[in-house]
Every structure is written in C-alpha cells, then in structure tokens.
Length: 439
Image (cartoon, rainbow, N blue to C red; front, side):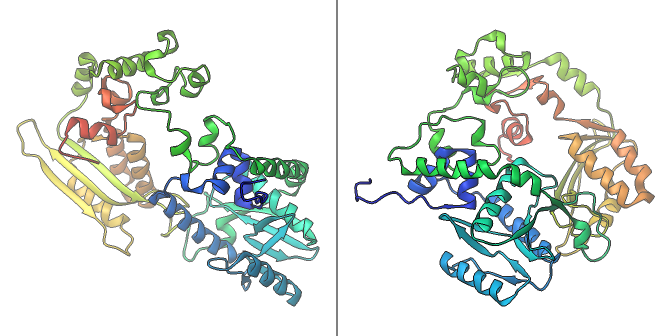
C-alpha cells in the first residue's frame, strides 16, 4: 500500500503497454514520476503532425466514417460515444475507444466488413516493424475482451514506390497487410506482459534497470536525461565507427574513454581517444594534401536544402523523396579569381524543381569540380532532378561525375578535432574550422 493507504493505479493504455515492452522502468517513470520526463523536441512535434496527416489520408480508404474525438474528451465519454455509434449501426469509425481489464485502446480505423469488424492500424513507416505487431495485438486483446467480434487485423503503411500523378490515390499510397496470424501468435504474450507491467506499477521503488540499447530502440525514450545522468563527456558512448562498441564496453564496467583497452579500438577510434584525452587535434598532412590535389578549377561548392513528406506533395514525387527548394553555389574559375556566389530559394506554395535546376545549370561551369559535404545526399538530389527532367539528365550526370566529397577526410579521420566527439557531420566540423559560422 502507498503512504496514502491506497493501491497504486495499474491502468494501462496502448501507448503505455508499448512503452512497457521497451522498458519497465520507462513505464514506471511515466506513471509514477512524470516530472522526470524530458521536453518534447521540435522534431518530435513535427513527427506527430506528420503522423496525423498520414492518418487523415488513410481514413479516405474508408470514407464517410464517424470520428470519435479524443482531444479534451474524457476517456469515459470516448467509450460511450464509440458504443453508441456501434449500436446505431455505423460501419466505419475513426479513433474509436475501447477498454477491457483496465486497458484502454483507440483504433485508427474500425470498419465493419461482411464477416465482422476489421482493425486497421495506420503507420507512416514504409515497412512492417515488430513493435507494430504488438501495437495491434494489444488492440485485438481489448476489443476481443470487450466482446466485439473481430474478423480481420491489418496494418496500413506507406508504399514508397507510389508516384503521385494528379490527386493522391490513397489505394496506391498505402499498403494494407493482413497480420491476423502474427497477432494471434502474440495473444498469450500480451496477457503475460500486461500482468508483469502491473506488478511493476505496484512497486514503491523505481525498477533497477540499467541503460542500454533499449533506451533508443524502437523509440527514443523521453526519460534518457534522468537515466543517463551518470554518463558524462568523454564516455565510451562517444566512440563511433567500427571497433569497440560503447554498449558492450559499458556492460564490462568501462564508462570513460581513458579506461578502454587500446587493443579493442580500431585505428580511427585510437585517433579519437588520443585526441580527446590529450585535447589535441590530428591532421594527416599527406592524406589532406592528396585530397587537395584531387580538386581542380573551375572549383565550385554546392549545397542543397530539401524537404520531404510521407504524402508526396508534387507530381512525379514519391513518399519521403527529398525535394530541393534551395541551393547555395560558390564558384572560383582559378586560384586568382574572385569567388562568385549564387543562390536559389523557392517561393512558398510553388513547385520549385524546374526553376531550380535550370538556374543551377546556367550558373555552374561546365566540367567544374563540385565540392559537396556528404556526396550521397547531394548526388541523390541530383539524380532525382535528372529523373524529373530527363532533358537535363546529361548535364546533371556531368555534375555528379565531377563531385568531390569534402566530408571524406573528416570521415576517414585524416582531419580530427578533439571537440568533434567522434562525429564528422558538418555541424560538428564547421564551427571548429570557422568559429564565426554555425550550421
């Protein structure tokens, strides 16, 4: 019993169940110590918004349904409204609410087919993940327990091969996969886990569960700031690349870089550790010279900015395809020439692609050396532009063939600044090379 002489609340929802599958400690903290939670980042908020947009489009697969409101609506009222709609004979419900055995779930789409009710769980991913099976399994457990006859259990996810041509064709945008057999296999496990989670929630003390890969898999936990507070700078978790792994070292009781046996480190990790501990930088002058000797004039520096969406925004685009809306281009014809600057920034609400590529092709000199940072990204953007505008493909391919990746010497540790903490991203490198600039 608690100090108030009341039993702890062992209520669970679908999201709490999935949190508990990832980590019992995270579940406990969410229910009992929510003040320890980290703030939701801007990126996470945008992710939630994108998820809502995908859900709205998925509802078009079963039009004319009734939505059960949930924002600022008590759970009890959501359940009552769901029950009323089912009694009325409503065939399609969006976000209906159910409870059984003190477990609460909402279903993305519930549709009554010829043989019974069909569950459709909508995801903005492009493939099925294990956690999604458990997501649907706990819904099936509750609906079945509540007495609703369920005939089909489905996952609805994004078809990343769909190409938009005109209005969005939702039947092509989504893939619907029957996962009934997979869900049935998890039925016993779901029951067992619900009981285990409730036992955890009855405890007075925070579960003694150490940090691990589960802190980020399948989702980044929002209690990392609390659970990782004993991990400081220069820890083994800063090690990057092949060689020693931070989690494996941590399991052996090794936390600080200074305690890592040298024989476990790769050559690049040895550079990182030595620079970090001595607070000194490393430059392989021979390799850097070879890199500099590989560039030629005319010399250009190119960088794209892009956006993407699960719902293709423009004709000819696929889900999550990078669409350029801005570029920066610096050009130098020879060593003594002035540095010229060009840029493009799209106006809001237009398709920028053709205007962008036509302007770029006019500005970039023929056969110029094109220096980029992270060539796989820039090449991907250029290849997409070549696909959208085949009339320019030859010129675009010429740019691609002349690309030099400035990231390479940083990635290979030919240049390493001790403050980079294993990273070779431009966000890590730029402020150290040019302190007055940031990315």
